Image (cartoon, helix red, strand yellow):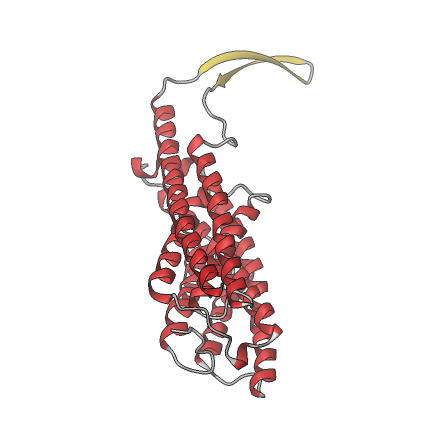
Length: 324
């Protein structure tokens, strides 16, 4: 029974990846269509003008007002809607694969690198979808689905292992709390990285001839707005990562009798915290704006990816739980 559930989980994982690819293509086509619409609008005739009479201080003033046609934004293209629908469908399959893996293992599905990747990418996608309730960030669909496809592909090819019992040190309720919050923090950091990339592209476009390949950026928020969104999203991730660091220290004391031991995983978790703390401090108190703050946010996410892909796999220590 366990073997069958694990097999079904793998099948659902590959199915989710296939749907993510469709979503990625749809979001890419949405960007292309946006660029085409902007180009067409730029090449259209000047807007028709009409005269409007207004009253200012008892005096009638005649003003010429331009009228424009075309999409006013907000609704999105059909490709964007298809991309969102396919992302939701992929997430349903993704979550089902994760749940089946957990049932097969009779525990939470993040006890090794494959399971951590499976759960982590699902949570990144879920956070992307939930954030839409707060702010329209559908333009990050290409980045999020692309990142999910890459990470899932690496996990299924390089990290897959059969279902095995947890190591003694992991048999704790702290596994549920500590790792889940760390994954959630990573999801917000990923979203912040996507916004930082968009902000850098917008900043690059300022004062330069508009490239046809970047026309779609005119439909996105401006550089200042993207920087503010990056800061807010990263701030949420930083709070979660701070809790991760504290919870890890408490768990370490329970498992090994000390709060801190300079293990490689502990050090890199702290390095990530320091980078993002530096980003928040520099932007809030030193007045860092523009490209500098975005690059610092990307450096932080690069540290997260290094921690995930290199430290977890190649560095040996008390946190060597990759299962590889």
